Length: 342
Image 1: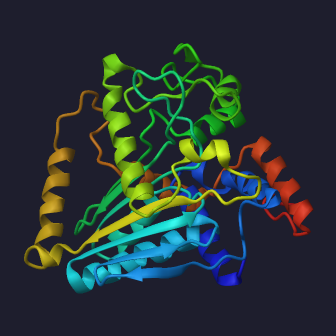
Image 2: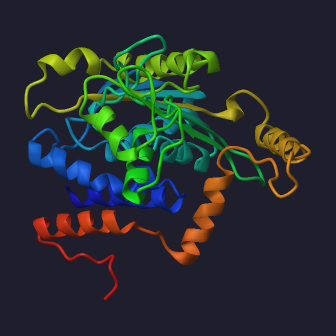
């Protein structure tokens, strides 16, 4: 990658790990190497704006890794929101972009509200009442700034759990909670390695929509996944993976789509009043009597902010199995492996 794009990518991946989102940080590197060696990922790609409508834009990722183009798109959406009150930017022809929340964080750090959705290349979510996977984990992230509290930062997969969470459990050799993954007959799969097989290798089975079962309202997760697909993929003209997979040729890019919306609170109300009311809202949640005194009520983003402070002091842990794979990548790339101490 060009040095500036590599720096952006590394900063976003490391920032994700600092927040404790181990499933979407450096643990993604083996998958990216695999795509690059297969010819479906262009590391020399540089995104370009192909449509600009004032408050909206479309950016072509040119088949490159999603981090640089996603950061560019979110910053552009914020620029437009600061000028017009609202900024909306779609991205087509991209790849995996890590954790959606890291881009919502860009918005709140610049003082605006941010919404992020994305389509996905992997077809791993089984729709409610379905027997075969048809959608990806299709993430949604939303961020809103406050004055003195941590910003509200929601980052969620529309499956009951993200596929990369299963990968982390596999690295750690931990059993899965029932309801995260199902086999071809809808039965729960609790072995992480077996779940990885159903998610990535078998045509049947996969991850459940948020909710897990129809009785637990999985139609809501299914609906949210469709919303993320429509905004992230259909709006930008990106591929619908389930339809494209049968005819996709080796070496073709993933053509993942992303969507970034920024809203400037000052365009809707007096400057600073939104952040003040956000503090009041968050304080009200904090004042909720907890069910367990040792577990106070939190809002989205606070656990990650606390973990970031811990990891800035103590460092980022890397499981031995992942470290071995990272060392292999460095050897194949002819670059020093610097994460193993002496």
